[in-house]
Image 1: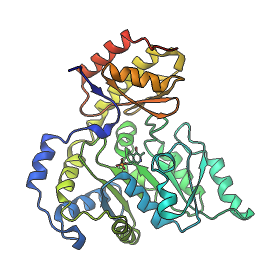
Image 2: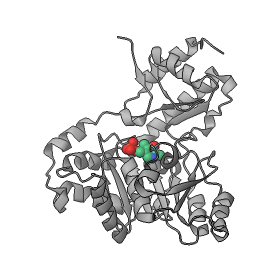
Image 3: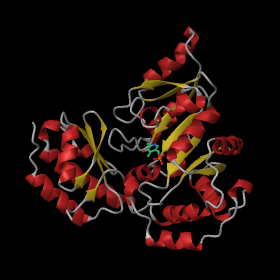
Image 4: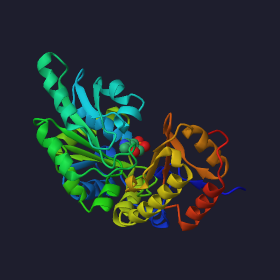
Length: 342
Ligand SMILES: *Cc1c(COP(=O)(O)O)cnc(C)c1O
């Protein structure tokens, strides 16, 4: 069998042996009645970690984002978000489907929202434009290459939007924490609600969390039910999530080191992409190339699995199941690689 180094996403990670043990040993109950002690512990632990009153365990990050939009908006409202963010481009139009909102998108090519554009959209309410109910931000910002957003920018944004709620899509919040030294609570402080995935770099098999004020989380529980996200004895999943929070955060720095090494390899292999490897600060290598789809397909056939996240944008993601030996294999493949069309 040809070797395969799977860099398609950090969602491909297997649960760790400690997680499998915790899953087997988990004490569970019916979360529909609030009686799963393991889920309750995970929710409490996460809320404390991000400095919020309460948290709700959800099956996926998408559901966490969707619930946040649902509880912070009304039908016909506008949600301001970065053009390249997950809520805008990678959730199958769920916000329109579930919450009847529309997005006003602003430039986020560096990861940070263009503040001037955000303020112009809010200002246009005066000119009979729709009500801007909330702003959504992403940290780390996936499409720009896992960029950690500076907390100063988040505080400035929250201060500038006139008391409107801000949702932080922190699918990879702990990558931002490890890369910046800013704590999860500091990042979450300017936001009303914060979502975080346990199932990406933290290696849990399933699960995300949404945290925020207690009254908003009560409504979030109702919306989770409406979306079919109540999980009964979900404590088996929460048990893995607790191991993720306890043991898998600090090691993200290893993924960041390997991603930077990978970034240098790709920059050297495809100089025409003009990719600056120093922009890779967490675990995502993403660069534009006119033949991105073809490169990804041809590298995949050689055992280096990546993905495209746009017509001309390639992405390779490091995670716990990638080691230095895998990186050496990738280096070997890239050294011999000649794309068939240039
Ligand atoms: C993966 C991801 C999500 C959604 O998480 P799922 O668990 O796959 O639904 C949301 N936002 C960002 C930025 C992501 O990368």
